[in-house]
Length: 243
Image 1 (cartoon, rainbow, N blue to C red):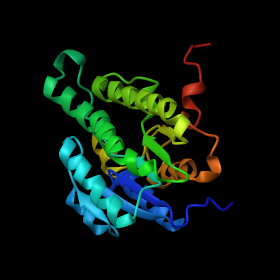
Image 2 (cartoon, helix red, strand yellow; image 1 turned 90 degrees about the horizontal axis):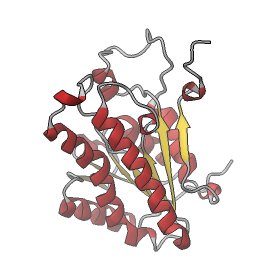
Image 3 (cartoon, one colour; image 1 turned 60 degrees about the vertical axis):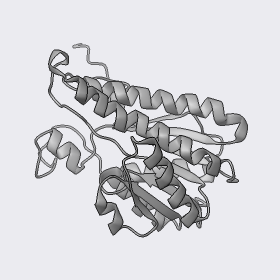
């Protein structure tokens, strides 16, 4: 299937590693022209245009989006993949306010600021789309990760609210909600420095999530908007009732 992404101009945040980097690689393989933003200077290793910016800062986010958009000649697709996990295994009553605020700043405010800055460019596209990288934690909960789950739920609802608001302008907004992905962040969070080969649960690769992002970015999925694309091997559909 031709996904009609050749020469499409795509902006990816959180592009230095993990899902964001895999998205850059997958989109480039489909012929898209990709701009990349990350607070990590390693984003410069990717093909230009790139920008190093803290997307929780409104002025920095606007400047980074503007710079990439001008180099690309516009923006057709925005992929919001920047995110952090915050404290893992920390009970609510031991969760510091600074940790709570940081998780929401990166996962939610950064996405809001980036999307707000990119909106004028998306409005000029003939097939605009936004793909938000949320998490299955937006829908289910794990003890000790309250800030992360709450932020991903907020991010998912941000995607849905924006999809409704921008529908009259033809701008599609969808969210991918993967379960555990084998990234350096998840390896560190879960104490699996050598990977998940011994895990007793299914784990997906960044490339597999990137494939989902590519599909949702494609103009071929024109009718699909405000979707919550859960990829968790069907685990959340199973009852935990002991019967």
